[in-house]
Image: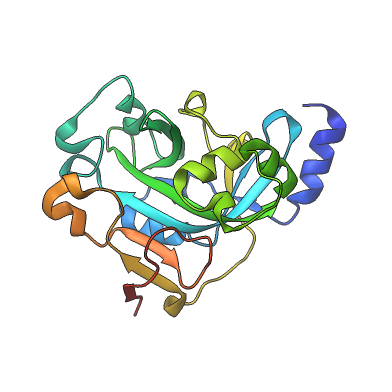
Length: 221
């Protein structure tokens, strides 16, 4: 990255704190998924900063979770990265079309992950529009995990990146949510998981227009 672009990015993210590895290596994937709400997901590919506030997440609880790619201890060339140490990207292709961005959590060999389902655009909206082929921004720009990745320029070849670096990172800018602003629901599109499809593993910011699917279920207490 050229010096001028790096300097511009550093100015734009001044005051942000990139999340450290200890945030990701905690044992509770549910706590991490919930606490990612309100944080900023950012990319700096080709010196272009794009960023959005995370408004929807889903937790996947590893080998005991039938909705997880790692259920039953499954290990494939695609999913091996789920067994990495927390703070690593896991990007996979869904339906041969959508590149879905996940964050590996917990410690090495415990394949927990959090899917980022929606963000609210903050920086680089013009770049996002160019990437998705839109002329004008609307709520579909970053609503749903496929749109998140496309707008932020994330693809499967970015799987395995260290999220403590600046190609892809997650930061805290001091934004705070109150418990009533957090809604918990079952996950979307995991009917194949049987009883595990009903687990309350999806977290959203109440009434945010970028949230995908159903928006209301169970407020935090």
